[in-house]
Amino acid sequence: MDKIAQEELKAYLVQSNEEFRALAEKHAEYAKLIDAIETKPHLTDQDEIEEHRLKKLKLHLKDQMHEIMKRHRAAEVA
Image (cartoon, rainbow, N blue to C red; front, side, top):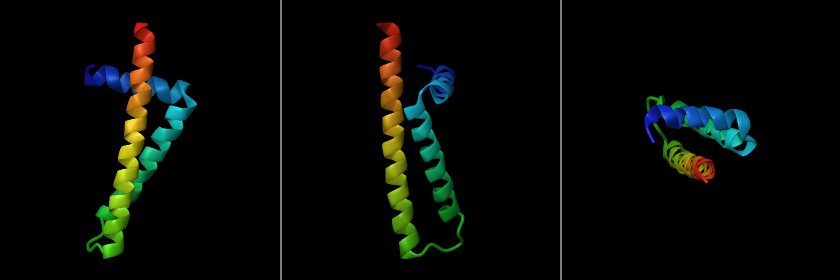
């Protein structure tokens, strides 16, 4: 699937799928928190632990979003 079609599917699912929308919102929230940590001039050990934790959570959400997209595409073909 090309990049444009994938972005269109994401936009469609944000509008039409409550679960996908909630995952996308949480994903964006984690991205903002990670950016805030990464913009600090000096990271503490706690900052690095939190950044790592947030990145793992964000990746898990991304995997869940991709699974919903995969199911949606499969349903369209069927």
